Image 1 (cartoon, rainbow, N blue to C red):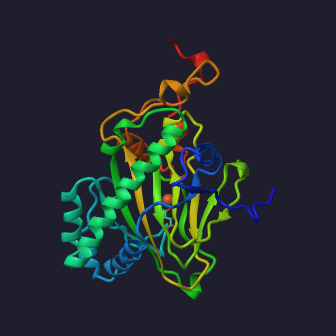
Image 2: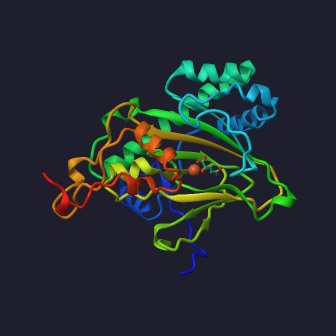
Length: 310
Ligand SMILES: O=C(O)CCC(=O)C(=O)O
Ligand SMILES: [Fe+2]
């Protein structure tokens, strides 16, 4: 089946609970959807985009001060796997100390610091709001989500004429429960693989829709939902000879608590599929096994019920 003409679902955040069913469908079939009426001011989004662009202009010695707090949370220089890609990031957005530290490392101005603080807080709130809406739409609570850890990452793609047709970021899933992306408003290139196209898999381009934000579900969402929510496989391709910038906010999960499917999702026909994991341990397993595109969930699977000794 060709995927031409397919488009990821658009969810109106202002229209709940009416959109509940549409949201759950989007999360099962696409693992990806666009949100509108998200209340993040457009001026804040564009101010943040300008800050992001200038953060990448500092000398590499300064960028390297942005060291990892958890694996992969800090500066990523262009490398063999993704030579066109560069990223800066920060773990634990809920901690204003961590945000200040990020700003100090990169020697940002007072205005830039203000923008980063306001943006971080707005997007942090939005990730918890979107997750709460999803959990509620699935008939379960989400009490502790405000305490969950968040990671923030800004991405730059050095696209040129010569790189058109090559890959900006290879196929992967996110490790998070969910990710909110502020894409480049002009330069496309993100592609997602809907579940209907598996197991062969074909990509659907996600064209930018200025003012909206994009949500992707990650490995934790699949583990938590007992396999019903889809951790969307995606990549970024170079389609234009233009620099591309994106901003990602990852809702990772509770810090030390084991995550497992709530009892509402488990019955005789739907036995528990995955062993309980903390975010950090699932992430470690993902890195140690080199499984970037969701294969880590195969490693987290419990043996079939018939072979389990109860
Ligand atoms: O830049 C994008 O549009 C996607 C970035 C992404 O997939 C990620 O940061 O995990
Ligand atoms: Fe991603």
